[in-house]
Image (cartoon, rainbow, N blue to C red; front, side, top):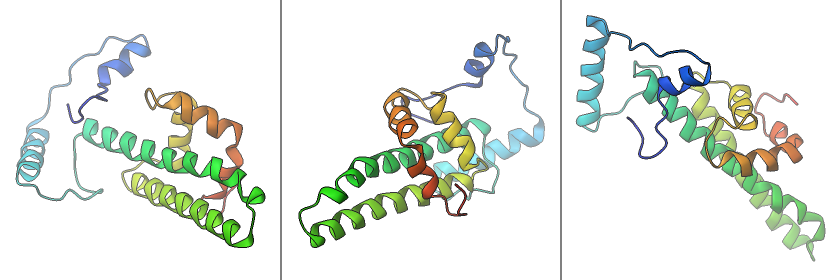
Length: 159
């Protein structure tokens, strides 16, 4: 509903759990919130992370942002392998800056997704269990083989 090609409905979650999805009837207050949300979107307004938004919309945002964060982290992994092989100190510094830049981008994106109510550990678990979609096989393999790099970019210093 809120994405172009990665729309994942709650019915898919229910099917994978072996349950039959029952459509939930929206209360009058939820319908009013939905109408306000739709009006703001139609007017190209800004929706803040702590404000009300439909669950499917929030879920889609988290998935898209976390996929982008994963790709930034995975993008830095091959570059890191070349730092020790660089022919000069200047080239090593350039590669280190590039790796640090990619890691920083991933960090900002993970932080943005966390403001929507999903922890970084949940995003990494979703990545590792292939819940992120078609690209997860590539990302999952790269991060599983060198998982320590993902942990090193954690803002809170956890490993």
